[in-house]
Length: 235
Image (cartoon, helix red, strand yellow):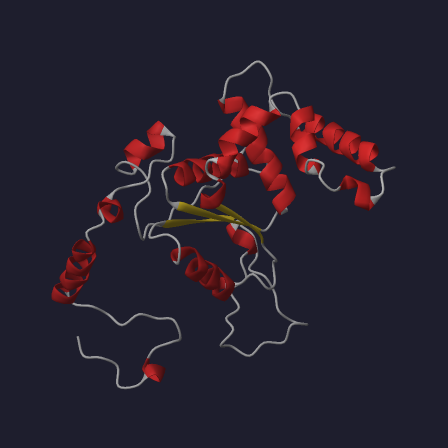
């Protein structure tokens, strides 16, 4: 295809069109890398979905999970993200609705439930363990805490099933990134930058956005008045 004469011929971020021969050469370049995982789907762990998607998530695909509030969309997203991380890919979760602490806690609870053990972590047991750990350390001077276990370790030990659940999460800890999204500033450009960070240590990255209605479409290349910027209306 003829190349654009100037960068300004295309909107910022837009790729130039490729004819079929150029598209084939792109695939040839990927084959030459010699990494078979680039052509393998990543299973989601949900067998029905994997069958419908030809084995799982594939590079370049976009999947949207819709449903009523409190139906379990975030829980499903976190389960898939954990499975992606266990497959050696990097799962990047950007959540506009919940903070990193809540996401971490929900992953810990899910991990304990998947172990099918007698004890399972719950939000209540975690909250009680937080309060107990803080109460125990509350009367101790900061200097006297040196050499003692991390407080989170104490929390995990206090929660029934916590040690096994956290041990399982630790196996995928480096492959699962959590981001608390801001409805105004975590824009498309910010997501692109996160992906640039993610691709440095990994070839395969899956981006999860929870939820899409809150994603700001503002681009850093466009002038904007922050006092009048609006989010896309939710469907």
